[in-house]
Length: 536
Image 1 (cartoon, rainbow, N blue to C red):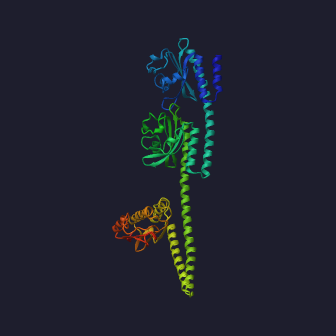
Image 2: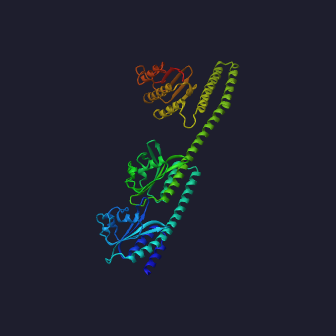
Image 3: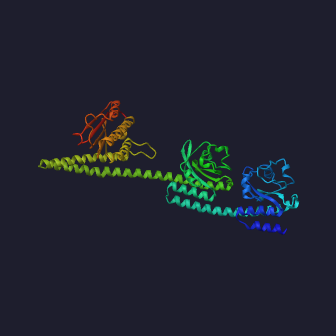
């Protein structure tokens, strides 16, 4: 009786659950003089989620192989949670025998452990040392210990849950502060992956976002194999994350390697066992999944841990939603700013330039010296040209599309010019005149882009130019002109590499002209490509 009391007190002194469980099974083996003992934790689906043996060396346990899952005699207590004593367990109908290297066992005593009325697990004891059978006294002692063990386990779980709750609140507070500070999406998602991994005691974590209809991409990863997971694509079909994203419900598996729902297992999943995948959901919208895994052999994620991970997934979904709204707000602000700039240019700059030009024209009539009058005339022409450039800029600013819409031809032409800067070694100048985005049909616009890219490519390869001026105008016809200050093309080289632009012009009823601007080697080349304007 004293030994039992000491065992009960010893069990109650521990608060760390793993230590409590080990103390329980060691105490049970000592009290009954059993050679071997084990405590199996019953998980969801009537299987053993964890198995803690005593009496065997680590080397012997490793030689035996995977720990029991709850078949045979062990499963008998799971299906019928009542005390069970056997003189020879090998003779029981439920016995499945022993794996290779497993020590021989005959006598058996099994007792369930209940926590708050529900079966937590079972104590398994075998091979009483004196060769006798386990008797009613042994059963009574272990049953009494099991009652005390249930209380100790409950206390340890409450303690563990309080610590985890504190960790969760601390993690969620850190994530909330990061969200409110305006941190980038990748930074917030990385923080969520790290903190969910720590609180849920997982080995790896990843946030996956939709890539297309067929797969999800690992946006951020943390823990074991994070480098291997980076930017990996997991198919929507045949994966737990795909199933979670499609159904909007958490998906849990004890061992992903044998789960038929995860037949498209990625390389970084080969060492995993327990996995939980939780959808990133805001309202009715699902935008990916949070995946946590533990290495093979570790306990699976229980219901409380799934709820915990769901909380982190909710934070990740919120971060994505806030990021989307923030980006839209920035785009709207940019459009408003462009409208303001366009309005100011129209109302202030153009009006002042126009007034200045009128003043200079009037003053020019009063100038007697011809050369001075010519200079004033050229200044007026320059002002007119400047007004055209500003009007073109205003039109471009006002023709910017709303977020998500397509891009206009003016912007695409600018993109071609920008892309050509690196091979050219300088940035060409671009001037557009007329309603480029609205008057030039889409089919003609594709030819404009192709011709411009080809001409600039020829300038980069052959002209040895330091400057190039590009003009795209539309009125009665579409005219693209590229003028460079390179070496020129020479008589025999006039058609070299530029046949395509002539063919494109003829296809649309137009023409192309390639000329030296002056003596070869001094003034460069002028390419003019024109087509009649067709209704857009």
